[in-house]
Structure formats: C-alpha cells, structure tokens
Length: 145
Image 1 (tube, rainbow, N blue to C red):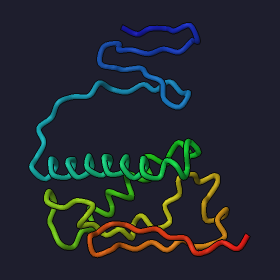
Image 2 (image 1 turned 90 degrees about the vertical axis):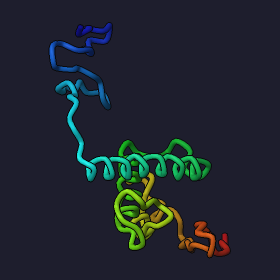
Image 3 (image 1 turned 135 degrees about the horizontal axis):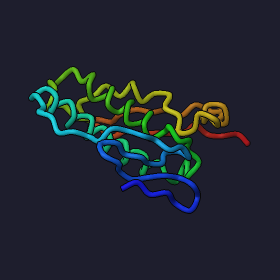
C-alpha cells in the first residue's frame, strides 16, 4: 500500500512498484525478483559484500579524523575502491581473495569529502606503508606551525 505522508511524500508498494525516499527525492523502482545466481555471480557478490564491510571498518577507523564531515557519495566511493583492491589481487582467485591479498594502490587519493579535499587542506604529505604483518601505517612528518 502506498502512503502519502504529512510532508507530501509518498512511500510504499503499489503492485510491483515500490516508492521510497532517497536524498530528498521520491524514487520509483520495480520490486526485486528472485533469480538463480551462477557460481561466478555468488563469488563476485560475496567479494562486493566483503568490500562493503571492509569499507565500513575503514570508515570507523578514520571517524575521529573526519567526524561527520564526509559527503554523500563517500560510502560508495570507498566501497568501490576497496572492491577494486580486492579484485586486483595477484595471489588468489575470485572467491578466495580479500583485502589482505589486494592491491592497496586503489585506496591512494581516496577523499572523504570531495567538496573539502584533505590534499587541499593538509600542507604536508602523509607517508603510508604496510609493515611485514600487513598492517597499514600512516605517519605525518613534523609540522612547523
């Protein structure tokens, strides 16, 4: 049943059409249908789900640095960059690889807010490297205020 709320927006389901709100817009979309996935599709969707989960962990780790000052597309950009890292693993095949095996170069230059780029605000370049345990280390050179 489609509902007209007090603000004039509509949401709900009418037949095989779903009305919902997204970023201040009313979106009309078809109802999702079940379909049979191939093994390759399941492997790819599993990796994409993993990239979303890894992206969330990265966002939470950097939360003290950016707080809530990210733009609306940051979550998708980060998930896409992490997915590219995973897909470009050279050591394992699809369905076996994760971010630890990935090519982390795709995260280079990732901005949490395209309207306020860190590279424009920060006058020193941070050094990022991985240690022998695979941990990512970020260090800033001394800042002369």
